[in-house]
Structure formats: C-alpha cells, structure tokens
Image (cartoon, rainbow, N blue to C red; front, side, top):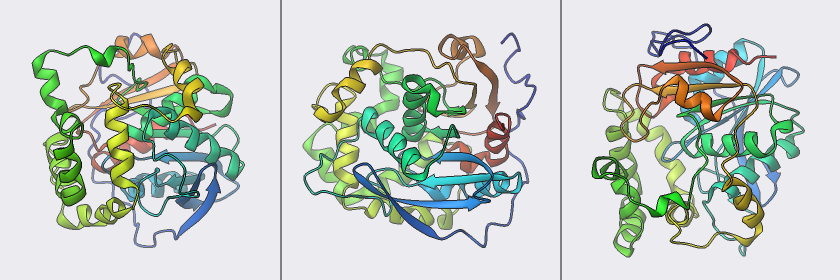
Amino acid sequence: MGRARGQLSGVADTGRSDYAPDVTDKPAVSRVRAGVLDVSLLRTGNPDGWPVVLLHGFPYDARGFDAVTARLAEAGAFVVTPWLRGFGGTRFIEASTMRSGQQAAVAHDLLDLLTALGLEAPVIAGYDWGGRAACVVAALWPERVGGLVSGNGYLLQDIAAARHPDPPDLERRHWYQYYLHGERGEAGLREHRAELARLLWEEWSPTWTFSDSEFEATRPAFSNPDFVEVVLHSYRHRYGLAAGDPAYAETERRIAELPPITVPTVVVDGRHDTVTLPQSVEEHAHHFPALVDYALVDAGHALPQEAPEAFADAVLRLRP
C-alpha cells in the first residue's frame, strides 16, 4: 500500500464523469423477510451473476445507487439494494422489537438478509450507516463476505472514546448529532425530517448541485413510521446516551475490541466530504491489512450519487 493518494491501479481518481446509464426502467421493489424485518429491496441483474449488496446511509436511500447498480448489472453482477431499518418500505415484523439504530443492529440486519437471500460471500459496499453495517459484518464474520467497498474507511464506532470531546472544529461538524440528543431535536426531526435531510445533503457535499427531483426521489424514504425512533437511537447510542438492544450486547462487545478487517477491501473517500474527512492510504491500511486499493474521488459524502462511476469501479475491482 505504498501508492500515493490518488495513484490507483484499479479505481479512477476523478470520481465525476459524464457516465449516465439508462436507469429509466428501474427494477421493481420487492420484500424479503429477514430476521426482525420485512426488508424492502431492489434486485437488479442476472440472479446467477456474481452477488453484490449495496447499502445506503443516513439520510439517503436505496435509489441513490441507481447509476451504480446499472453499471454493475451490465458487468454481470446480481445486485441487491435494500432500504435500511427505518427507511422506505422496510418494516419491523413485531411491534415489540426495539427500534434500535445501533451499529450492531444494522450489521445483524445485513447478516440476516444474506441468509434470507442465500447469498454466499457477496461483495458488500456501502457508506455512512450502510458502510458501517458492511464494516461490522466484514470484521466479525469475514467468511460471509467476498469483498468490501467502504465509503469513508473503517466505520466501527468506538463508543468508549466517543465520551471524550474532539477539538471544537471537529465537534462542529457533528452539530446535527448533538441536536438529536435532546427533546428539541426529537421534535424537530419529527416535524422537519425532509428539511433536515436536505440541509445535510448540502452541508456534507458542498460541490454537489443535486436537483429538486433527485432529492424528491429520496424524500418518501423518510416517511417510514420507524424513521424517527431509529435515527434518534442511532445518534444517542453511539455516545453512550441510550442503552442498546440486549439482543446485540455480545456483538457490541466484539465491536468494542475494534478488530481489523481482513477481507479484500477498497476504500473510497470523498475529497470534499465535510462530515467524514478523508484519510491517507496509510491510515486506512492500519485497519485493512488486505487493502486492495484506495480512491480519493471528486465528491462529498453521497459517494454513489456524486461519483457513481468511481464507486462502481471500486466494486468491480473486487469482482470474483
């Protein structure tokens, strides 16, 4: 891993391109019962192709991968793109299930989905919450993963360390998390969920000029009846302000050890990301001893929408 930033063997450095596949014939949404969820998802490509699972973050949704999915399907992949718990049409099966947003919960959701669909060692790729789920599964259950593409690198949360404040310039980037810690933020999220999401899109991706139609395509994902509870729990649990679901206690214990991720990995950073700052190849390699490649792309936080060709190329780098 001695290559300098941006000097890559398999992933373009530019990120942005004129690549715009025809995604007018979008795949239909289907549902799969997996673990504690009825998961709403898209399946694209040849079911006998090499498997890929794409995982979105907050506050985005599965449709943000449309351009990535089209390119991967053209390359022979079978692509599964779910909506995470609390988003879109994904629903909890039981009313009594805790509406947890903790990292172990979304990781187990991914494991359960792989089992339900019978996917053996797929390439899993994600960013933000979805990248965290992918990183946790790759770290703790590497035999279930054929390769990992992680937007923003090593995303296992160090909850013990989160109790200690960062320098003020870094703390300021996470204002929305502190906002959601209190009752005012909870009320604000309930009343202004789409407005908050749009503000975060703008702040985290300052060079991305997305259209009203792009945002409106994602807005319905925030109408999920569990959205507010799941989001609030996610941003409170990671600071030790809310208890986790007891069902995931052992997984959280294992995550707290911050194990390395040993599966073949490509890391993608956004050069203009203002919430998760890009790191050097050496910093990433510390957590990923099987780091295959690194891409610093001309994008902010919404990597699959801002740099779909580069994100797809990162997945193709791990094609079996």
